[in-house]
Image (cartoon, rainbow, N blue to C red; front, side, top):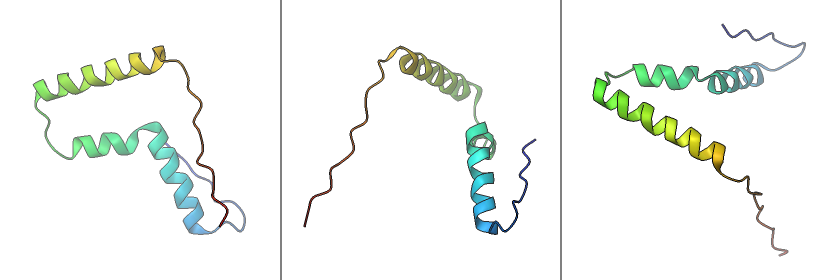
Length: 74
């Protein structure tokens, strides 16, 4: 269970943003969206296999530096 404590003087929209971020990090929103529609067992098996392969690929790939776009002076 996720709990959010409202900080002193914190706006409600900021608190809700923290809650949404925690839910996304925990995978709660993904699970709710997935459960919204029926998923056939064969589709579930394919999805799990894709997720497994993606996790393996990400774990084995070398970490690349992300380049930021340079701002042009105008």
